[in-house]
Amino acid sequence: MSASQNGARDDSGRARSVAIIMDGNGRWAAGRGLSVAEGHREGARALRRTVEAAIDLGVESLAVYAFSTENWARPAEEVGALLELLDETIERELPDLAKQGVRTRFFGRRDRIPEASREKMAELERETAANVRLQLWIAFDYGSRGELVEAVRRLVADQVLPEDVSEQTLAERFYAPELPDPDLVIRTSGEQRLSNFLLWQSAYSELVFTETLWPDFGKDALGAALDEYARRARRYGAR
Ligand code: FPP
Image (tube, rainbow, N blue to C red):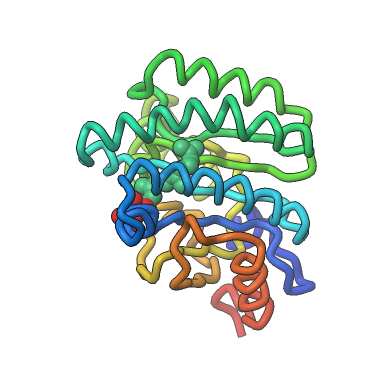
């Protein structure tokens, strides 16, 4: 499989598949004397705004990092607030987006998520399965290294022969095999690292880092990142 095969490469220079590391909720809240939970709540509003902007800007697939496997190590109160926000987002924000043609899928581990939330996730995935305007992928309890280890376990369990192990047979066993490789990965809040997000899938992605804190992100910031992407020349290792 070539680097671009699984992606949504568009030779017009437009990014069709975008991934975002939504960072800076805590700093946004601290700057206003608010709790970190309020920062995440504002982050959920920014997510909705950004999905609507992505539709307007012609993005076809948007993957966002909502909760990493490492985030369980945060204070119990903050973890609880994020799990609550997951339920609230599924109940309040995502149905409105579904009406606008958004198909939502979650990717990551499901076994540590409370049963009631798991059911809500599955229900939303079922209800939006026929939507085609924008593919929204929400990473929840996701870590790229864990995903790779899990995929190797599945190869072994499926008794795949060594000579049949390939990029394709491995990637078919990821949490979301249909997730296109991102053309563009954006990280907000000035941090410049991938933090275990889509390490395999972003092998040839363009990276854009913005100082904007996630709760302040929206159409202008997304448009600026897409413009920056359009100025880049992607070569996939070739000349
Ligand atoms: C990183 O900011 C952000 C997170 C760990 C959570 C992201 C979650 C949302 C945007 C909420 C919406 C989504 C769902 C579906 C629940 P940080 O808290 O690490 O920021 P800091 O580095 O400034 O402290």
